[in-house]
Image 1: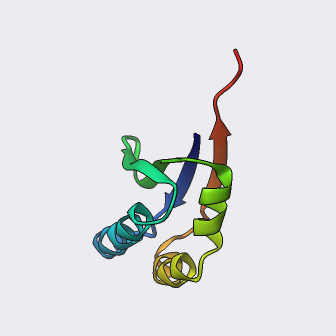
Image 2: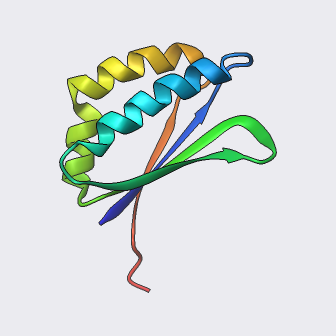
Length: 96
């Protein structure tokens, strides 16, 4: 299993519109092969900073979803509402 950390920063006044569209992305990801679970958190010091932590069966499953036309179409609605590029970090358990 891997975890994918996605950080996004929403432009001022677009929070509600972002939330509606971000739910669509998560709903579609849930049905993607290899998706296990996910949650989205808000930064308590910056309410426009969102962090999504998603668990995927494998990096190949994540990569397939990440590169899918479906995700690209959904992201085309989200990107204009962000004032920075999203940051994605793929994490795996350490051997320690």
